[in-house]
Image (tube, rainbow over all chains, first blue to last red):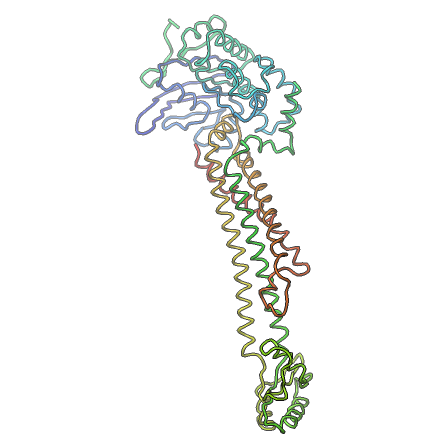
Length: 225
Length: 301
């Protein structure tokens, strides 16, 4: 589905990642850890095609990233839901419009999707906030809205970058339960986080693989995780 | 949940969902509207100039091409005889359809703009004028001059070529200038709207990032901007055209005394031509924004 083989990424003359190999198989659950600035976000961006590797090969659904046009990337993004720490909403649209945005840009029949949208907004607990503008939401609500937007196209994989970075523990657990539920539906999950407590909590409910970036290289985390 | 239905309705086909994803406000909206309106206003005048000079060139060309004038300057007492002799020559000249001497009233009317009414022609040594109308084939001007010189010493043939051609050329150049002005107005409009579109795209870089994140293709993103700018170009063009037409209407009516300047306007079906300006402004805005959007999106990561 998403494969990285000997991938390196350099920017401004400095190497940010080197010789990274990773395969995200369908239905797998991965955590990506490492200190701030270690390259977690860069690796995630390589995984959803926002960056082109400077070495090695990234394959998205079998296609070499370097050979993909911008429209190919756009099509691949529809199969990969992304949740950013800062969520990245369009503030002039309300929550429901933001969540429906992937449907709109892909030209789906929105009336036919109305029931799904309602269900999804209910699933992330934002039914009462559907008409609110993103700046009016709390950190936890924003993250859940971002998750709803990421999964509305029923993607094959969900990638989340520090999704619990700005929210309290209770909200973090709630978000994690949603991600675990998605994984049980067969979605591939990759979460970049430095919150080790969250990883431990998740491991109690789902089989995960924990990866760590250290010294610009990717490695399996130790048994303590 | 009723709110969600409302949201979906805004995204329905025909409701231009792509338009909704770009924030509606911004200085580029005003700039585009103003530019399109100002350029359309100028375009109305350039169009009027082209059409008026076109009419002038046609009139000068058609009215004068088939006529000539014979001027008789003779001592008092010989004027009538020489006029009659000239008319006889003209009647027997191949290519002359008709020839008639202007009477005193007609000659006085010709001189009225310079000397005023009630000019005492009989007290002034005014030459007699003979108006000559050619057949479609025309006459041999050189041959006629030689015959007149032999038979009517005081006659001078003026076939208008000497001063008609420069006038027609000048009018044609003016008409060309009008069309060139229209082309320049179109190019300036495209340039201004391109700048406005680039500014709008740069100001909405974050919106574009989000759209790409959720899988929007470049065509979708470009459409969001293109439709908006085309609509503004159309609206501004309509406003400027309406104001331009009102200004043209406010010009003094065309009169002989006013000459070309008072004839600067539209006549007959030409009033329909300014209606083409708003859709053209919309098309120019559409093409300029589309090109700017494609270039900008290609440069964005």
